Amino acid sequence: MSSRDRILALLRSHPDCWLSGEKISAELHLSRAAIWKQMSALRSLGVAIEARHAKGYRLLEPPDLLFDRDIVSGLDCQIVGRSLQILQAVDSTNLQLKRQAEAGAEEGTVLVADQQLAGRGRLGRQWASPAGVNLYCSVLLRPLIPVQQAPQLTFLSAVAVVDVLEEVGHIRAEVKWPNDILVGGAKIAGLLNEMSAETEQINYVVLGLGVNLNMTTEQFPAKLNYPATSVLLETGRPVVRRIFLRALLERLDCYYAEFLRRGFAPIRQRWEQLCPIINRQVTVDSGPIGTVVGLEVDGALRLQCASGAIERIVAGDVRLVN
Ligand code: BTN
Image (tube, rainbow, N blue to C red):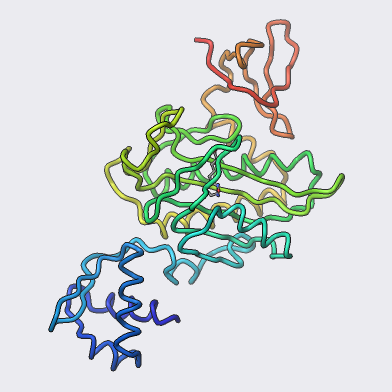
């Protein structure tokens, strides 16, 4: 255990008690300077530690830390989360994990950051990633499936996020094709899945998941061109990020195992249950009008036109007609 983890564990085992620097130093065999340095690091990560002259330090509340060892111990996962890295800050978890994938990182490697300095969204957009509030997570997979089927993994991550929003956040979300998660029409999570492939073979897919957990209104960028929300804004209750992360890794692992065993069908079925425009009339970028009848194996939307013909929608903004 790192000295930071040991200090935190000691403070936790004495809730609401003052622990002098001398006592901590004696128990953990650390110098006073090392203790001071680690206390400052913990406080800068948002841990509420009070420090008083002649009294020492005390923990004021259970912290919402990501780097805590509790996340990995007893994690019920076969593939996703085999290797887990939690960083304080990174440019983008997707970018960092893609670098590691190029260097040969194993399938199931997960990278999480407390903060992203250049969080990326779809279509070159930015993804607001302030420290200490949300989940920014990337997962490396190396599935032996045809390249055209890689988009199926986007739907896999979508259903996992919706399930965990319900289980841990007590919030009912829905999916918006192709890769948004909405609550009451406002975006609560986004997915950015990136692939490297040869003609016939996938080298790797990085699933990027951004979930707005405890973000407040002021923390959203002033100029967002879509409505956005967080679990805190929806329910008034904060979510402990490491609990959300654990549940999400377990759910992703479970869906991935099922995907490798049984293919896309169970995920497609779950996604269609969560998609409010199934069997509704829509228009795509003011183009074709039709009834949404489901997903194709490559993730395209199936639209049944008035003539009965099925059109494949591969991109575009889909809106309800009425
Ligand atoms: C979108 O809806 O535009 C996709 C947003 C994806 C954000 C996540 S946060 C973790 C991962 N790292 C990134 O830089 N982006 C994704």
